[in-house]
Image (cartoon, one colour):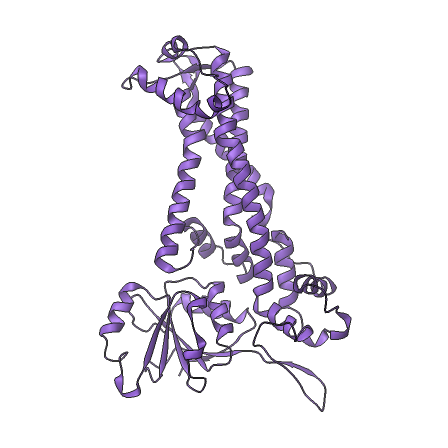
Length: 425
């Protein structure tokens, strides 16, 4: 399943009226995924897919970035065309690993801090300014950000190698270690380090010490530099990038399939056509008189008016550490008269619904600074049999009743086939 088909099938199911589906037409032995695709294909409509999901856009981006960075290592010096070897190694080989390392550190940090991996800063900024994207498109963009990053990096590496060959073969650029403060041994160590993978296979394409010394602050037209840079670019950059790209492509397909199966509408449909195999709590009722199909659409209340906390159970969904500290010291939260239970929750799987009173309404407090995410919908699905009220709080645990962020949460929840009753007073 690619991005375009994912968005198309998700939209087909969202627009589908459940009463149009006949249980008799589906083979119970079919997988849930195949059954949903069959339904989607029958109701297929043409969805306008945004340009950001066109892979050619990222192909052009990778080529453009490599062309732009090539001006940093290929230039004219003293009226002679030169390629600065150290800058080439830095921008083509070292820089992609630096970005990859920072990306992994960011993911590890967000996982440790929040209990889940957050989207990158660039992705969040882009989505916050791209107002025409639907929640389904935003979700797919977040799922695919790593795939697109690896694809751009792979194209960047290949194109950089092409520019290196083009500059030296057709434009007759010479090689040079251009510096005035680094010693000769430094460059010898650089060359020796990047030659390590080649030496493991008994290849040694390093230029000789004489050529290295000759290249320091002087132009060299030896092919040994070209062969060496081509080989280390392939070994250090292109092959690892190809592996990362294939892994990200595999993960993307699995993530899209998982998201497709776990959407609220998909679960409702599966519960209807395969009630014996469904894992959801969504129920489908049939009116005996009219035999019309009625879906038990989940209803949650969104309170933007009352600032009271008359709830026995309060669930704090991914609130900030600052808000937690204030909540622990606020008397209005620690109301001992009603034996209140406050639950701090970062992950849906950590919630044990057996400790909750089915007859007691639950207040869910969400942080206005957080983005709406699929995990919150999974929380609502898990609590489908409870009376739920949602309120927005800021990082200081103060109620927020009017904000553009609130509208974003409302739009996100409603698109997941969950009915929202807004309490405005």
